[in-house]
Image 1 (cartoon, helix red, strand yellow):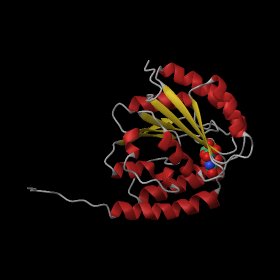
Image 2 (cartoon, helix red, strand yellow; image 1 turned 60 degrees about the vertical axis):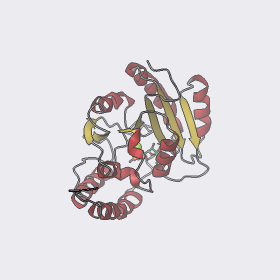
Image 3 (cartoon, rainbow, N blue to C red; image 1 turned 180 degrees about the vertical axis):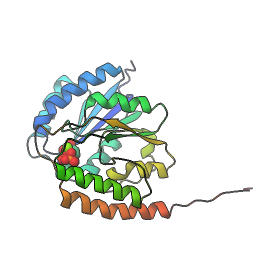
Image 4 (cartoon, rainbow, N blue to C red; image 1 turned 45 degrees about the vertical axis):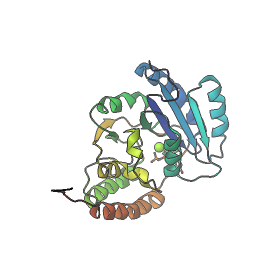
Length: 242
Ligand code: UDP
Ligand code: MG
């Protein structure tokens, strides 16, 4: 195993907002699954302004797991900001993102890593969603509209379980809402992107932070911006350059 903690093989990047009751099982499952992979890793937990004592609990988890790093925001800035802060400090060669509420399973990380042999970005696809019906339908519509308007073929951009080669973030501009468009943004930079089916579990503790109002409508505005960027991407072919 590579024991150089300054450049671990993996940075696990996890935004969280009021997820206290999920953190102990999350940490236990991560520890078990990452040990199986036999790769050096760091776990970056970004506390996005929680008011339920999540950060305090993370500090106690750090006492027995030195691979855990904590970024704590003073206020709630949203999942994109939390990802951005996590990526900025991440030291790994591959970044793996997932939710803190265990709706994604750490046991599926290896599925993404297998595909990383041939790709730069691997997106999880929650093919059997375990969410309330309203969320399932709005997500289906959201993905269909997104794929149509941005000429994409990603089944489930909302799935946080993804893996990226760290270089993917060297040129991509991060903005609010961008986490739903990572596959398109990375493809625009020439990276090889694929998807893999992953498991999805019901939320056991805490509550969802999204509803139709705060997700669908704001992400539609972002979609129009992405569509514009994609259509206006500079392309040319050089037949001679002295
Ligand atoms: N989250 C966050 N900041 C926010 C909203 C959500 O860090 O402002 C985190 C949340 O704690 C979870 C992940 O983003 O780890 C996904 O959120 P959630 O589970 O509420 O979304 P859903 O699964 O319902 O779509
Ligand atoms: Mg969730």
